[in-house]
Length: 127
Image 1 (cartoon, one colour):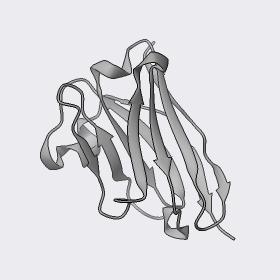
Image 2 (spheres, rainbow, N blue to C red):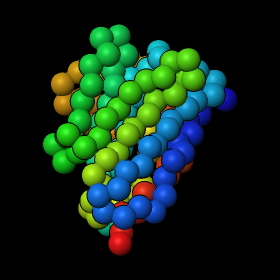
Image 3 (cartoon, rainbow, N blue to C red):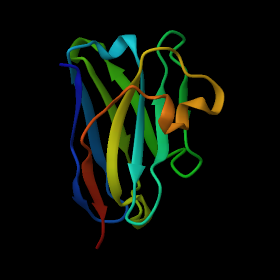
Image 4 (tube, helix red, strand yellow):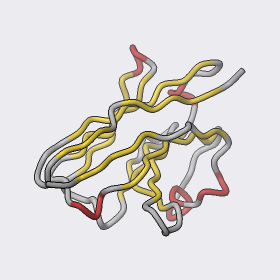
């Protein structure tokens, strides 16, 4: 059975950092475009970042550019989202998702294009 699992969420003070990891069973992440999404209470799920397969292109939402970094660790079959300079507005449940074909342009942030989803990990930024 193919599935994704996120880890690394938690409670952090504003200005702090967290490192989220996404790993899979049943398939290899390197064969997929991997996206990170988040859903804050009362809001729609939004795209945070994506690393494409094939060309390896990387995308970020404007709200996280310069603070978040996405990367692959193929040896560990893991995609990492390093989140620095966290703000209270980053508080949300964070999900990783996988898409079998490449994603280009704004397609990376479209929920409908992803084939597999993890269960999510809570990130809370609060003093």
